[in-house]
Length: 460
Image 1 (cartoon, helix red, strand yellow):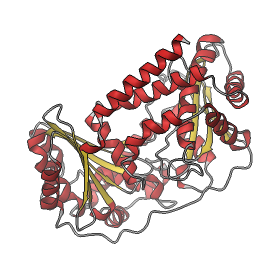
Image 2 (image 1 turned 180 degrees about the vertical axis):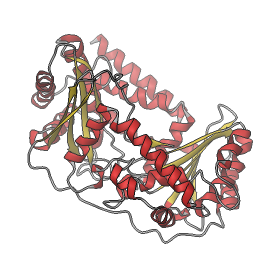
Image 3 (image 1 turned 135 degrees about the vertical axis):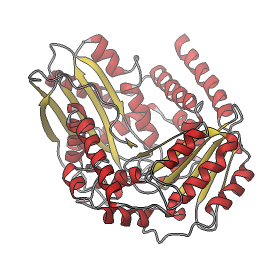
């Protein structure tokens, strides 16, 4: 009982911190006449600003045979306009003491700068210029396409765990473009042309298909005026609606085996699950988020406690779920077996833990502890201006409302043990499951591949 009381006190303290870190009153929004949405959050803790522009286009928008278009275009956005030559964008930002980069995901492409607050006009001027004035030179395109192909070799084809991850998604989805890697299939990259990339840019890059998010030591009204000055004359596009492909229900377990040179086996299990934009019941994504925390959220979570430290079947284990994806996604469990242990035994043990959550409600003390961890993770992410902006940008870009950021904590707190058990029973079923296994092959003198980072986003 003492532990449960302490957990509740932790939650209360964290919620108080959350109210300080992000107040709805500190966020303002407007929409320019050309359709550009501007969201501004004031954060006066330091004289700096983060500016991010989000385009509603990513890997899941790409037609079959043209995968990788969005990520190659992300690279081309640094190759200049009539006003600014190749590499000049990055040089100007650096000369003004800032940092910039970009990333492409399944559902979005985003560009960002971190700057001292008085330098924000420079960011806006450069982003407004390349929003519609990009130059597509054949030699620059071919160079960047080669760079992306080399990225694919280094980050996927030479990384057996990334390769296994890619094969899992290609097996779990049969029609939805989530089956394709964001970086693109190599065969598609080899055939991409500069004309395709130019057409893709002109189709999706427009103010009425973008959201500008600014967080920092700024006044919203001043930012809105600045946005009108720099972006206001950018013409609207004729942006088509995003593609909507419905994945047919899975009617039985699927398995794929990947054989590649590696030192350690790797196990991935994915279940089809809903997200905020598509859930039949509004509480389900939050219950799935709590379920992910129960199974894999830290050292006290069930899989770490039982399979890593307890039975010593796994060297490490993780659980992932993205409730803000644009389309239904996968609830993922991944693990490496401990030395001398097999993948089959590890898979059975993981499924046994899932069955335990399906058969018995989570004790309230454990549920409170996991909620406290989920809330703490959420609150501490708000210490970063970048991640405050990123969360709002993602929500807006996938068709949701940035205000869901402020509702997240209360929705998590409202999740019950019965709801967690219900989503585990409903979605974590064998017929809804895809399993991918990396079967290590001899290295033959080659160095062991390093463990990759998350492969869902590709960064310029």
